[in-house]
Each structure stands twice: as structure tokens, then as C-alpha cells.
Amino acid sequence: MSEPFYVTTPIYYVNDKPHLGHVYTTMIADVVARYHRLRGDDVFFLTGVDEHAAKVADKAAENNLSPQQWADRNAAAFREVFEKLEMTNDDFVRTSEDRHKQKVTEYVAALLKSGDVYQGEYEGWYDAGQEEYVPENKAKASEYKSEVNGKPLVRKSEKNYFFKLEKYRDQVIRAIEGGEMVVKPDARRNEIINRLAEAKDVPISRSGSGGWGIPMPNDPKQTIYVWIDALFNYLSYIDTPERKPYWQSGATHFIAKDILWFHASIWPAMLMALRKCPGYEWVNLPRMIYSHSYWVSETGQKMSKSLGNFLDPQAIDNYVKEFGLDALRYFLATRGPLGTTDSAFSPDLFAEVYNSDLANTFGNSCSRVTNMIGKYFEGKVPESPGDNWMPGKSQRFSDVLRAYGNLYKEDNASLNLSSSAHRGLEIVRLVDSTIDIEAPFKLAKEPANLPRVGNILCNCLESLRIASILLWPFIPDACELFWERIGCDYAAQMKASDGKGKLDEWVKWGQLKPGQRVETGTALFPRYQVK
Ligand code: MSP
Image 1 (cartoon, protein in one colour):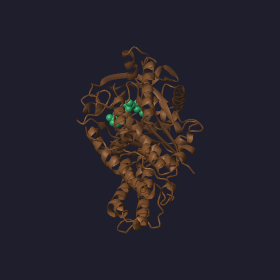
Image 2 (cartoon, rainbow, N blue to C red):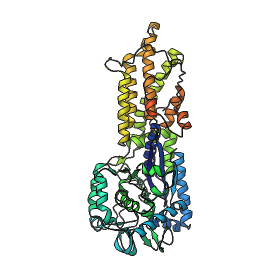
Image 3 (tube, helix red, strand yellow):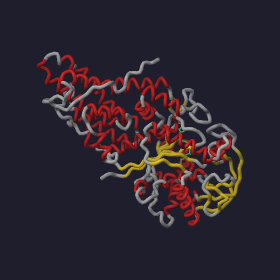
């Protein structure tokens, strides 16, 4: 039975073009989506753009365009980058679409009716770049400047509608502490719990947005606050009879630390409030909010549009041209800021990781083994009369690889992507050390040794086959090419079953058939010469 699995990214502001930070979050969500498809899960992966921000309207005005025209242009740029990078999202959110606006109107109307949204007056410190009010103590601590871009906060007051966050804050804390909604990494969870304990009701509407946004259902002069509009995307896009099971399976939301507060406080509280409204009893909480850290420049500054130090689509494209798309995926997913520390994006490190992990390890090992099979066995999987003992004869490949496969699944369940990729690489390293120790290329000089050589190469190829399955979510293009060369039709099987794979079945030891054709072809990852 395939299980539904729902994974999302933030929806990105369209005031400007996409950059590496946006690509990163969508990329890791894509790796996770691919892993779940490989397992045979029924995956829904959502990414997209957030259009109704005041800064989108401002940028549009600067460029003499309507907000919608400006949003159309940049939404297209995001879509294009994600398509180019072969992201496998199942839909693409645009908050200016009617299907989203209608649903958000319905949700807010339900909350007005239940009384969890009410009219009031708000005054506070506003961070215009982040489109967010900053609590008094935080504003003071940062000397009334934006923590993100350093610009002065502005004092703002307005009449608007409020959501009763205070009423739900203890329930949200309990949901986090009890594990109903997991907030990761742990260090960030404590920050949120402390802040939640003090949470007050929050404004959810604005006046004077010039009509850019979704009107309050009962008061069209007010516009639904862009953050409320945006958070609802996770629900609005799958609030259809066919897609609902994805929501109910418990969403995994990938975000960065800058927007954890909204996701771990207001969002679950609104869902709790909505669940009490007639017709929304099916609404549960997300299963996981994963907040990663930032890519920073080599000098340690956050990469961002406002700082102008980000890798733009052109720069990203240059990496893809030079190293291939798999290399970009692999680097971002294994060396990125998934934990609580920021990662510096360095071209030298990129090239080093490419050479060490992809060219010299996976790529090289595949070439070595298939080359020898070509040379000594006419490019056919040899008969393997022997066993699968590893050199030293204390362990069998089949047992060791089964253990790696289990660890791989644990790593993926806890979203430890770097460790998960390394399980595949560790298998490749076993193959390399087997070849170094057994030296089949020397043994093969003596025809009487050929059965033994066949046995060694069979074990190596079988191990590489399994490694390539584990590595597929990270470097799908290279793995699919390798499968083609060794006569495995996994890609076709996935295609034929709506993307679903059979991880558990495929990683079982001993599936290569003697006589099966094996081709070497060109290097999967040609070594990069530093210029
Ligand atoms: N529109 C809101 C999100 C609404 S979600 C309901 C928003 N948009 S944003 O364009 O500013 O994108 C923020 C997200 O982009 C971060 O949470 C993160 O996922 C990604 N990143 C932006 N810059 C980044 C880095 N320098 N490093 C890593 N990820 C970064 O906030």
C-alpha cells in the first residue's frame, strides 16, 4: 500500500528574481520528494510564489508596471528556474490565482464566523522588508532596526482584524512538546516555545494596500495580511477531494529560520481554529516544520536580494553548465545549511566536493568495474560461482549493504540528507577497497583465475547497483544513465507507475543476471581541472 506524503517549500516573494537561497529550499524538498517516491509513497510536492506583498507592488510601481504584471514576470522566472533544475513539484502556487483566493476567503470567513478573528486596533514596530511587526522587546534589542536588512523599523498603527493567537498558544506549545507537530532542529524549537508562551493576538488584515491582495470577506476596504494569505497556500492548493489525503497524512514544511515564527505559531494556531469550524473537521496539523539555516557568502553575509550578494539564475546556470545538474543538487543537499549553522558557498569547495565524491568516488568506481567487465568478460555480467564474502572474509557484502540500506532509511526519516547520501558513497568506497585489496586486474593475467575475478567483479557491480539506488534522489541523471548501462529498468518502472519506485525490493542483494550486458560509456562525472 502506498502512503501519501506531502512536502512543501516556502512560497517566495516575487518582488525580484529567484536566487540560490530559494533554489536551495526547493532542491532539498525535491530530494526528499524523490526519496519518498523511490520508496513507493504517493508524493505531493508543492512550491511556488507569494505575490501579494507590499514590496511587490512597490517594485512594480518603480518599474511602471501593475503589481500583477510585475508578479507575472517574476513568477515566470521562478517557474523557469525550477523547471530548468528539474524540480519534480506536482503543482506551483501563485497566490494571485483564483483557486487560492477563493479558498483563503472561505477560511477567513469561517474564522470570522467562529469568532477567532475579530476587529481591533494595532500599534507596533514594523519591518517593511520582512512585511512583519516586530515585538517590542525584539525591536528594542535590535535598536529599532531590522534584524534582517538593518533598515530602521517604522512605528505603525492601524485598525484591523485580529486572530486569537493567545487563545491557542498553550495548545500549540503542547502540540510541539508532545510531538504532534515536530519543530526541527531542536535548538530552534526552544526559541519558539519561549516566544509562544508570551504570544498575543496578531493582526491579520491591513488597510491601504491599494487593492493588491485578497479583501477581507466582510470588509473589502481591508486586505488579508500577506502572511496569512501565504500560509494558507499549503492548504488551499490541496483542498480538493482528491488531494485532501495529502494534507491529512501530515505535511512536512521546509523553510529557513527567518520565517519559523509564522510557521510554528500562527500557522498551527489557525489550523486549530479552522478545525473547529463546520466543514473543516478534517484539518490536522503539519507533521514537521523543518527550519534550516542560511547560505552565506564567503565573508559570512546572508545571501539575499537586498544585500545583492546572491547567486542569481545566471550564476546557477553557469555551475550547471560547468559541473552538471547532479553536481549542483549533490552539493546543495549534502553541504548545505540544513542544521543550525550557516554554510558558506565557496566555488573552491564546490569543485573539491565534486571531484572527491562524484568524479573520484562514484563515477570512477563505476568506470573501473564496468571497464574490467568489458575487458575480461566481453561486457557481460560474469557467472558468479562464488559467495559474497568481503576481503578479509569476516563479513558478507549482502549483510553490510542491508545494514547500510537500513541506516539510509533512518537518515531520510530524520531528514539527515548529508548522512543519507554518504551511505551510498560508503558502499562505493567498499567497492574501491575491494578492488585495491583483491586486485582483479592482476589476477586476470592468469586465465585460471577468471572465475575468481568474475566473482569479485560481480560483487562490486552488485554493490554499485545498490549504491546507485540509494544515491538516486541526489544524482538522478547519473544514476539513471548507469542503470541503462547495466541493464536495470528502474527508471522505466518508476515512469510506468506514476513515479513510484520499489526501494526495498530493488536493494535486495543478488539481482544482476549472468550474461546481462554491461556498458562502460563516457565518465559519469569527468574530473574537474581547477583553472
Ligand atoms: N513569502 C515568504 C514566505 C511565505 S511561506 C508561507 C518569504 N519569501 S522569501 O522570498 O523571502 O523566501 C524566504 C525563503 O527563501 C527562506 O525561508 C528560505 O527557504 C529561502 N532562502 C532565502 N534566502 C536564503 C539563504 N540565504 N539561504 C538559505 N535559504 C534562503 O519569506
